[in-house]
Image (cartoon, rainbow, N blue to C red; front, top):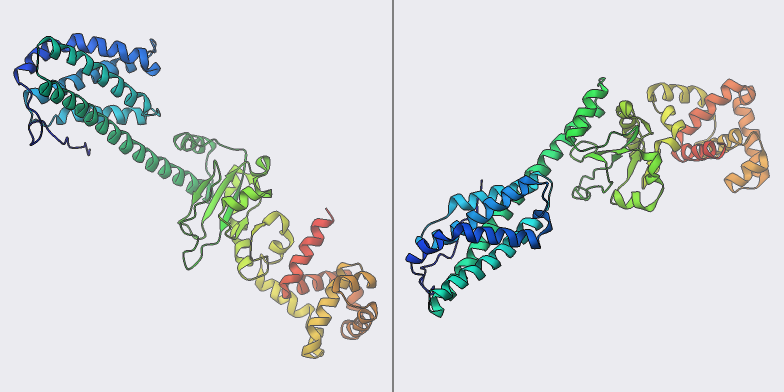
Length: 415
């Protein structure tokens, strides 16, 4: 426990001396002064005036007595450290943090109590006829005492806050690991961990997988999404977002700003127990983004690219389908293959509508008809067989990333 070391003791060069015998007189009045200080604090600081909260009042009384004792001890022994009293205020500050309260009330009580105590002590000094230098030394000592105990309380508060934040982060990381694990987990276990992590258990979640750049460009940019659980040290970094559909958070500018502009893949919305599945598809989508099969920039929603994800879920089998279905194109010249493949996919997707194909490809309908005649020679009756047409669509889509994105757009427009 790092309690602040008291500084600037009376008796140092430049500090007026205070008669040590004054300590005994002030100590005899300590209880009476403590009563008045306590009453004044309760009058001015509402948090300490609550009759139902006995703990607050006990802490107040103990704090007042400790601070006054430290003040008198400084007079009796200018070289004393007052470590035990500083430790008391350290614990008081720490307790405020652990209870989730602000330090404002305690700090206000110290200021109000210190000022009132000084007035009472000043009255005693006046009655004793002490000279102005001694009175000034008492004033300096009184406010130095307030500073010391306030500093100790602030240190305790800060230490507890830091520890609380670290512990909360540890619990949330453990909860996230549990939710994203492939194994089954009981709702009771999730509820217990969520309670300790101060996390409200949602009905549905979505997992966002984020790009982590090799140059560390994004490493210090933590996403800002209220209620989310995140692990930025994982590869890829992931964020579990509660109730994604209800908040509409993926549809607007706030989400883009929240992820710091970095490319991301948003997994499908699933029940909480299936969070690992959402992560699986988000990670798969992120890989396809890196290869240019899905858009490389921005936030890509898996829900908008289900066909592409399904298509690339077994890539060796997809490659086999593509090699077999597109084998007739090998008879065309290398310069023709790309144009013919593009025309064939557009024709298949448009329901064999030549004007629609021309519009999609920004070419003249006659150009489309010319290419279709070439395709008829290469593929023959396959172009009119339903199963063969499906294989051709899958093969052409997998061989041209931009075509995959266009097909996703066609799928969405039909919904």
